Length: 291
Image 1 (tube, rainbow, N blue to C red):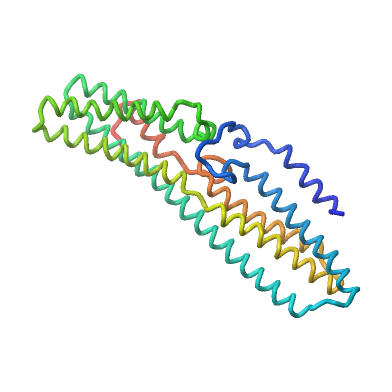
Image 2: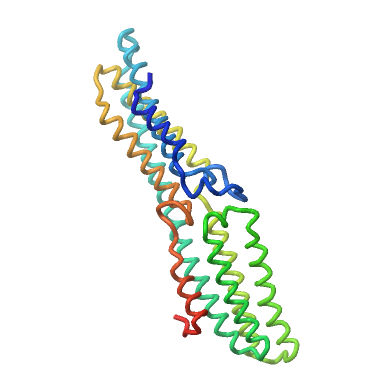
């Protein structure tokens, strides 16, 4: 039987209420990305500890039957543990690299929008006022898209509003350019708007660039096999430490949770800071010089 502590841990998964569980309509995301990282962590811990327990009981039977190959099993266990450590380190590196790229994308987009907003003042009236008002709405939309309940929802309408504002900003520059095709200032505005649209696309692409699910599934499989081999070897030797097994399961679970949390930029514990966009919005609303 599985120890009582494991059963209690599994039961807590049904009571976990996170922001992710309130996102009803996930679009364009992979399976693991749409599941709460807390639930995945609880399942990983329970499965790893169960594998160690099952392996231990099988090891005890093997020791009684005298068919044990302790030296060979020790080598296999060491190889599996080394492979698991390599996979975890590799996955953490991938997740951190993607997280840093998303942070930089926020700053780049804020700078692009700020430059385009400043260049909107080069336009004649009434296009100048229209562009400034559109930029104020655009920043609000981009910030709203950073909320997990909107980011994961297909029915928010924010994506459509974003595209409408982008077309409006572009069409304002085109309208002025048609009036005076030799105006250098209009070209500067259009160039800035183009960079604003491109920076938004790069940022959204970074959000969809997750750690491959195949890598995570491989980590889960190797972790279960490693804990199972560890339990089996302990059963052959006739002794084990339940505390050590719990700690090992917790360490693996903690690393997996960190990988998953890094891969969820707008929800969870580790999130991408939106301060650059917030400061830009406040500066535009107050009419202050942009930083």
